[in-house]
Amino acid sequence: MPTQAQPSVSAQAVVFHRPKAGSSATEWEDGAGFDLGDPAAGRPARLMVVDGATEAYDAIRWVGQLVDSFLGREPQDGRPALTAAAMDRWFGVMQQRWLERAPAVFGSIFEERKFTQDGSFATLLGCELTDHDWTAVALGDAVLFHTRGDRLVTQFPPMAASDFGLDPDGVFTQPSQRMRMRARLGFGHGELAPGDRLYLASDALAAWIVTEAARDPAVWGRLAPFDHPHVFARFVDTERAARRLKNDDVTLLRVRLSSRPAAALLVCS
Image 1 (cartoon, rainbow, N blue to C red):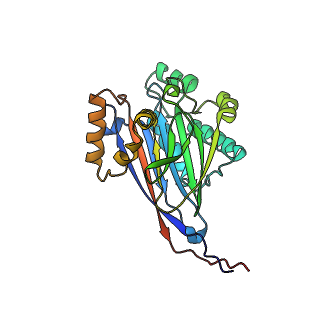
Image 2 (tube, rainbow, N blue to C red):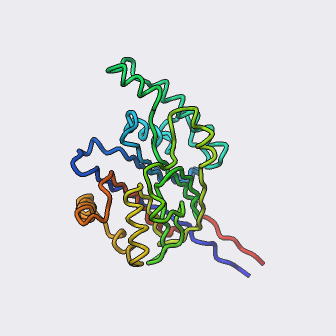
Image 3 (cartoon, rainbow, N blue to C red):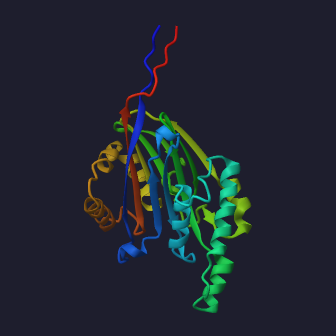
């Protein structure tokens, strides 16, 4: 009997962010971006949120490098496949590029030592969307929340409020950390339907969401309506003032999935 094809979904994405209280927009050390892909060309959509460590060397440059490459803005890289082997190779490429783009002259011996010995560091959450599902990779405490209506479908990584701490996993510039990164890299997957929403949040907001969702299942209704950066900024400032939200860089990448006509009809008999 004829069977109607499952409707495809298309994505609309927006990034909201707020630096630490007392910092300027140029001091925001998170990073986020998206590429909504090209279904006709077979290029899936990509999403990314990263969180650079404040104490790290030039975290802003490191998070920018990671976002640009993962989303395909560095044509020579190609976008890494979301497999353990491909991500490990990509980590190596990122570390090599970090060295190649080192400053020609350092401001001091201390700065040069910090670059070579300590390097930089950022947590990572990357996601790829096809017509019907999402696949994600994570190192650290940036979190993806997949919602349908007013309920949570999936949280990745599955962290509790007490899991957000001061020593998360992440992507290091030092090659000596490759084995640790390889071992700690996590993978997630979920099936999408029209009307679903994805929220990708850096650690401060992710911890707030996990805490609020435990006491108020209607929390998703507070995240869905943001329609302007000023509205998001007021929300962040209010929650910080109430000491419910940590004073840290805050980033939210929100994705809304809508239906589009299927490209083909599958008929079974």
